Amino acid sequence: MQTVASAGTSRRTTTGPLVVFLAAPVLSLVFYSCVSARINVVDERTALENQILGRYQELDESLLQLASVRGGQDEGWTPEQASVRDAAIRARRVQRFVQDDVDELLRLGCLGEGRTARLVPRACDEAGKDPKLEERIQRVARLENEARQAILIFVIETTPEFSRKDLPRLESAWARLRAEQAPAGTWLEDPDGAWKKK
Image (cartoon, rainbow, N blue to C red; front, side, top):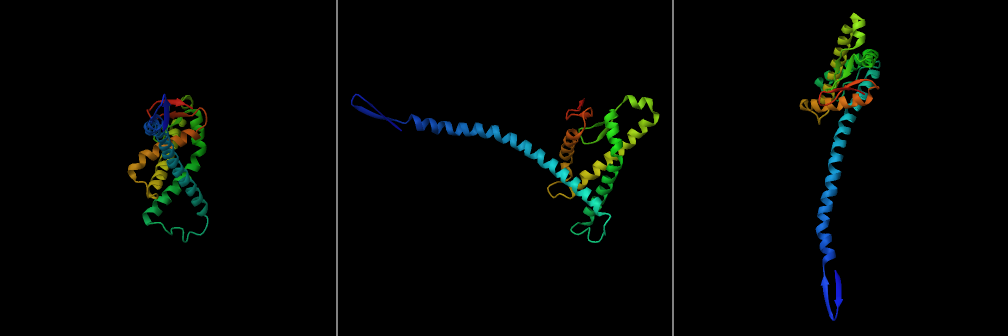
């Protein structure tokens, strides 16, 4: 509040507090809307990707433990969860077995990383030169895709926050992870279905 004196009169003006009173809600709304949307998108993406990566690490640790005594390994697991976990461990073994083939076929452009976290066979020059290569492309894609599906089911079934309806979200998050980890030159399908090389 300010006091203004002129020629024997004085009056009080409330312009300062009134401006602050009116501007504060507008400024806070502008600030809040700019910040909150960006944080929510990043947090959701990071949480899903971290969940998938954490489950991958858990499966790799379980593979190492298989060589040890099996007793007590199912503690805290329901029979259904143990079955899903065992299927995911087998799937992880398959992934390790076909990893060199996947890497080579991605590099040749015979496979691409799809938007639903699946390998997609693609026409490539090398397949025309080797008649057995097309069969190999199909086999490797099938094995890897079955393994990825088993691991996503494991994530859903063993995480209380997820249900089967979350599968599309998890597939999208995993597709983003695969795209980030893919080497340069890999064919990637974007969310709209268009293909491009990384």
